[in-house]
Structure formats: structure tokens, C-alpha cells
Length: 556
Image (tube, rainbow, N blue to C red; front, side, top):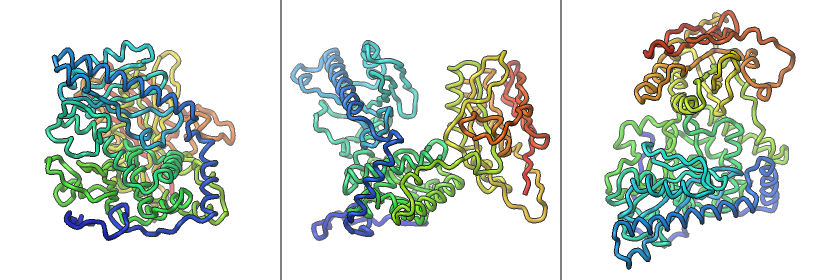
């Protein structure tokens, strides 16, 4: 195993040494110099044009909205308590509270970002009450729009827009008679005897709160995290669902950097972030604190116990019990792409600290559509907007399978899916259709003897589309005209599929290469040697059989 977690003796007290954060001592305690402060100021200026900081008024509006929501929760719990004949003496102090988590709670949310919230209720309030009477109470509020409940989700949620601010509300029922105002959700004792959905719902808050308690300086942590999140988004590596890292994972990497350089300011921390993680020996885990076991028998990440945990490629472990790896979606390709980006980030920040470049260079978006010679274009389409939304959600959650299949292909060294999706090309005017497109960059292996190679990707693509159709049919979501189309496209043909904003046209090209769609299949033969069509189950057949044959020609 790549590592073992030493178990500390709880009897030893930490009184002898000054408090340090994290599971190892710091790398450096150096204090910032004047130049570091100047560079940090310049970093703040460089971030401003990207809308990462919210105006004071916006922030006040959020606080107001959360206040109103909190009042609604208290009123609702009061009403429920009365209807359940709770003694009046208890009802007076029954409490109930909205907690926030995620980027808003960390203090790094961007303009217009949504808020992740958690409604905490006492033991006599049931989850079913939350999805009925609280839902109805929200429906009565004039400020509430787009109200929808997703009760069957892994983490059940009510989604809404309150006075124009998007909010996701989770629910947790604690084994307490009343919910005190000063409740600290980090207390592991609160998890005893809870329903697993409540434990999952509490997890977001517990992790966020732990992170904030585990960094030496919250302001330095926030500015560094804002910079790293912007950098990751600009470099197309911000997406948990597609196998990169999501917000919590980036926050934990930045928090670990802050622990290792507790006195450093943001300009130094951004540089050290790239230094630490370009040299990190994965799959050694990133831990913010020593995992403790609470004997509540919940599954925790532990490769010594759970064989599947040994296969995680880039473990970043959440600091609250039950500890989980937040990056189980990472694959060989996505890790390679991220490590390469860390190295480039290090080179750029080296230049910045030597005054050879400005911070803006770190946030320049590389042109994904020039980066690779070959691309796989994935198109998900459906006849109505509602079906399309569901279909896109399902297809996106399975793209990792396609990337995994491509990675395992002996002729492919790398598959990089761009987390940004695009509206699909407008096909026949006669048929109303909604479509979304993803683009995957492909590196083929360098061939020695022959400079011409035909790679058949049929099987890789086939097993991916089969999986998606199978799941859609099993979950009774499938409609006859929901389609997946997969094409192999060379760099020079991308302009035919992508909007002008993506690719700067050097010269006028005709779009004759694109053929229209017929009912059951799409044949976008962009070139005689690489046409690929991926028919979906047609309206007449409900079977999920997808036949196709396509070869990707690669030169050189």
C-alpha cells in the first residue's frame, strides 16, 4: 500500500508544541515580505474582471434572503410542533435553523452563484413533512420561483429561486428535542441513530465547517481558493462529474497548502499550491486531519479495509466523519491532465514571482480546440426541452464511462473531455430538436513504422451508448427520439460543428461536409475516411440495440 495512517495516542497532549495545522509540521513558517503583499494586491486586481467577487449589495441581498428562509423554517417547525401536540413549553424554544455550506459558506462564491443550504429540524419533524408542508409553505411565498423537489435523489433536495437567488435546500432531522441557535454541526455525537439520508445531508456542512477550522488564516485561504478555482475553470479541469475536481476538492487542496505554509499570503500560496501538487506522489492521499473513527459503523475511506479504495488515483479525503474520498471519479487521463496543468501553473507562477509575467497569464484560457489533432464529438438530442434536460443530465453523468473506454484503447494515450458543453448544430429546419454537444480531445499513440493507422472505436463507443440507453430504459426515462450521436472529427473540421465564438475562423470554409439527420441515425461524414454514425433506438423499436461502425483515421 502506498501509505499507512499512523494512529495517534489520544493521551498525548499537544501542549508542548505551538499549534500547527494538519497531519505534518509546516514546510515553512516564513513571514510575507513587502513584495509578497504587492503581488497579492495585484492578484486581487487580476481576479476582478472575471466576476469572482460579489458587490456588497449583492452580498447583503443574499444575507437578507437567507434570513427570510430561516424565519420560514422556524415558523414551519413551530406549526408542525403544534399540529403534533408538542407541549407548549417546548414549542417556545423548539428552534430549527438554516445552515449554509459549499462556496457561499467558504466565502468564495462568485457573482450569481447558487447557495447550498441545509434545513436542520428536531426529532419530531419528519423528512416527509419537509417535502410536503414545508414545500407548500415555500410555494405560497411570492419571492419563490422554479420550485421543485427531488425527493428520490441520493441526497434529497428542494430546489428554488428565492428573489432571484438559486438555492438548494437539504434536510436533516436530528435526534434532539430542540435545535439550539449555537448548534455546532461538527459534533460527531449528532450522527448517532440518524437516517443515512440525514447523515449525507449533514456531510456538506460538516466538511465545509471543518475546512474553515483547519486553515491558519481564513482570508488568505479564501483569496488563494478564488484564484485556484478561476484557474481550474479557465483551464477546463473544474468538474467532479467528468472526472476532474469539484469545488470541495479544490478547497481541500488549497487548505492543505495553507497548512504547509501557515504564514504565507495568497501570492505565495498560489505558487506553493502548484509546487506541492505538481510534485505530489499520487496515490498518497491528501488529508487535512488525522481520520478518527466514531464507531458509528459508517463506511469510511480506508484502503486497508476496503479493496476498492486502493484503486483511487488521486485521493483527497474529506475531514469530517465519515471520511470520504471526494475524487473517486478521477481517471488516468484526468489525473495526467491535471498534473500537467499543475506543472504549467508552477512555471507561470515562477515567472510571475520573478516579475517576468503578470497574473493575467495564469488565467488565460488555453484554446482547447487547437490543443488536440483529433476529437470525439458527443451529441445528446431530444424532441422537447424537458426531455432534453433529463437526457443531458443522464448522458453527462456517464461521459466518464466513454473516457474510461477510450483510455483503455491501446492506440489512445489520452482522452480529455471539455467540461463546457455547447448547443448542438442546427440540423433540419423542419424538425424541432434540442441538442447539447461535448467535445473530447484525443491523443493517439505515436506510431513507428506506419504513418497511417485505422483505429476502430466502435466497441468503445458502443458500450458507452448501450449503458446510457439501458439506464434510461430501466429508469423509465427513455423516449423514442432521445438520441446519442458520436463522431470522430479532426481539428480542421471542428469549425463546422462549433459556434464562431469557439474557433477563430482564419478563412471561410464551406459547411457542405455536414449532412442532415434522418430519423434513426446521424451521419455527419465530415470526411470520407472518418464518418461515424450512432443511431439510437428509433421510434418504432424500443430496443436499445445500437449498431454502428466507424473508424478513426489518424495520420502520424
